Image 1 (cartoon, rainbow, N blue to C red):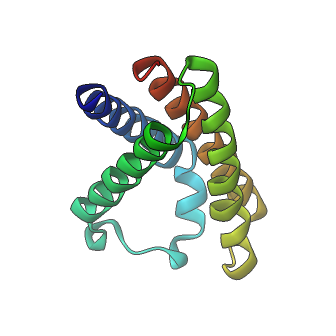
Image 2: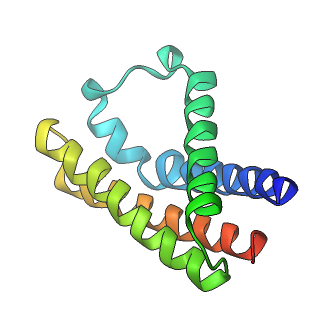
Length: 131
């Protein structure tokens, strides 16, 4: 089970990194440029820290599934990802919107992006860590 857990962490980390690039680097680029006063300039962003945070978040996602979900399957992984993504997405999107002057479209994008990423991760852990 340890080997599957390591594979799941690696696979989810890679998937989330790709999806983050697509969402934040491509799809939301113009929104971030239009709200540039809210963000650090690119040369001030701490990319190693960002990847470390993503790795820890990934490990926690996989370990919560591995340790707390009894019947492991693709379907249970997707359900877990959908529920986890709903929680993180609502927090990231609309929680941020409640105290930051971001556009509502960005709140929706963060919500939906987080939800899709978590469902994808759930499918990955469900497929890799079957009972």
